Length: 130
Image 1 (tube, one colour):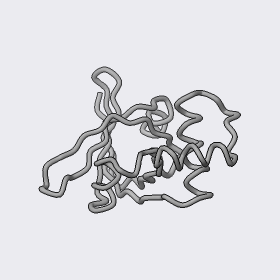
Image 2 (cartoon, helix red, strand yellow; image 1 turned 120 degrees about the vertical axis):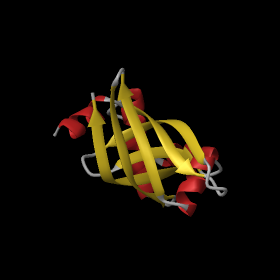
Image 3 (cartoon, helix red, strand yellow; image 1 turned 45 degrees about the horizontal axis):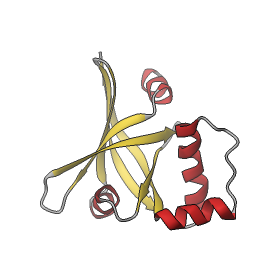
Image 4 (tube, one colour; image 1 turned 135 degrees about the vertical axis):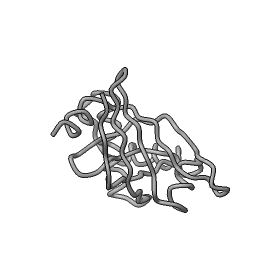
């Protein structure tokens, strides 16, 4: 319950993936948590997308001062509509605070232009530290 509340109260995380050579890649991301998955809207040409598809074991760090939640999980890439558009809209609603954001042809065209995709992360292990 504490971890769920912490995820819902925040929206920014450090996202870690593994590069081809085994070294870490870190990215600052906005996420949405639905109680089961963490969603990230990412561009298909970025290291985080390519790394997560190649090696789906990922980690996130969500922190608030000295309190932090670390999550280890598996990432799944979603690049096809309508799922990509609906999940991206959820992340954008979290980012903008606009609950009325509409998924329509113009929204999807914008995603295509930006080459936006979604990483859906299933947490497997989490720990919270104060």
